[in-house]
Image: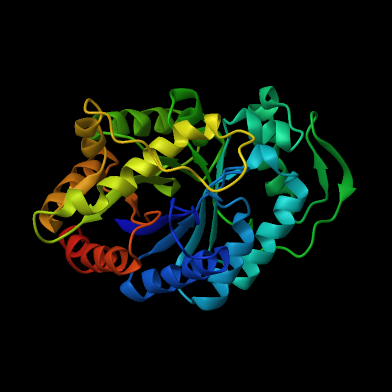
Length: 340
């Protein structure tokens, strides 16, 4: 198994007194700490036009992390490929790969928020085609060939330089939940990233991707399987109480993004957790003592055939950094050893 830290998004929790300068400084510092603690990877996450400042520009932050670290894999989870020009994305990703000496992994997603597509002038109905075009163009740009693009996204035979640190460029993963997306990852990508899974649903996803890999004549053993889940290991009986409001904010904010369209000013606080939601909210996070968290991760690793890259979503908007950092230390020092 491998273990990642994330998702770094620089969201401003309502009432957090820190400036944006401080939030972005913390994003780099927590990545440095993750490397020091032995995490295998750190991950950033993209959204646009959200009132809490959800990180809109991942590769500059990845470059800053690269400059402060030497070993840890640096990834995007997820970069919304349909919203980016593929050649500019290829150039920016190649530069980050060079700055990191070959440590970038480019996790790509479709995106789903109408406001983001409207705001950036991209038809949302084109997102699947644009994702597939982007992958083809990235691979052209990082090869020794000229970029001619695809039938739906042609380019005039341009030479994209510099090339990434690794031949062929950074690994490309696809964020995949529904069956068509998982199968797309098996056809086109080097790995997939899932979330909101149980061992049974993860095993089903692995089966779908494996079918596509074998159909394409690709080696499943060279494909990477990854999930990211909210995680909070802690000593004592108050683990849920410590993470509850922050976990609820992240969960609620995804729904509030639609209502926040066009909203100016500071982000509003999340409403109280509905009585009928708290049990499900708690079930969705790996929370508790190290042994409890490790047991649930082990079941997921078994479902992935023993080769899971588990990304612990340990970065919580608004949480006291000292509490977050202690949970990271517990994960790295007590959960990971139970799984290796």
